[in-house]
Amino acid sequence: MSIKHSLLAILTLGDCHGYQLRTELISRTSDSYSINIGQIYATLERLERDGLVAASDANEDGQIRYSITESGRGEAAEWLTAPVEHSAAQRDELAMKLALAVTLPGVDVDAMLTSQRLASLQALQNLTTVKQQTDERNPAELAWILVIDSQIFAVEAQLRWLDHVGGLLNRAAARGLSTQTDIQPNPAKRGRPAKASQK
Image (tube, rainbow, N blue to C red; front, side, top):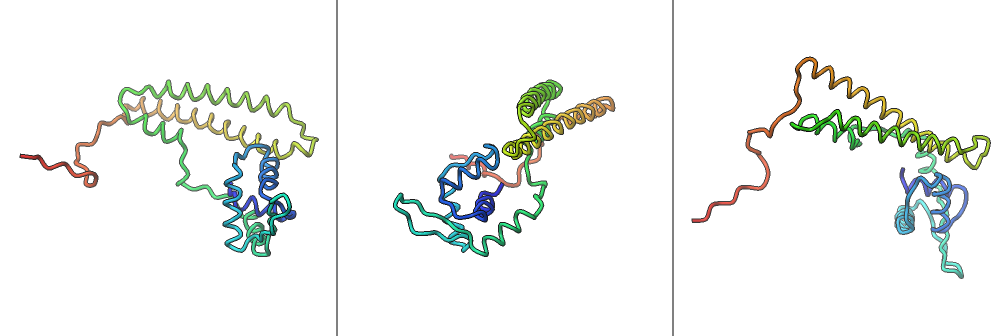
């Protein structure tokens, strides 16, 4: 999630100082957002430089309050209504790990899948237990429920994908296909040049 746009969205509610913005961001995302105060102030400096917020003079406690400008309001509104894009550039560590593993001789991919499936089932059980302790009738818990539901659906999707991968690999093995390969013999076209031998 964009820190910049999150802060702008909060500032549409009223002026805040840095620590207040951090508290609001964490509470409004149900502690699912880890951010330190240095990131907040660095982002506020960039927002002020770009004309999206204006800073007040420091008060008697040394706090500087930030207010959103009209340009900032426009940017916040645009961000809130724009869809979050998914791109092929987003790396999925598990998918990359399995893709590599199926090409390596001697790697027990079935054991990897079993291990990951057990870990995912445990995560799903933990998330479900936490979800059961929430109260959908309590407005204060709605943000937390949104976050935990997203995590539950993501783990469920991962479990379905792991089953799909297992079936795909089984079908490939039944057809006698092997994805395991050795290092390619072709010399690299780029890279560190070989050292010249000294005579």
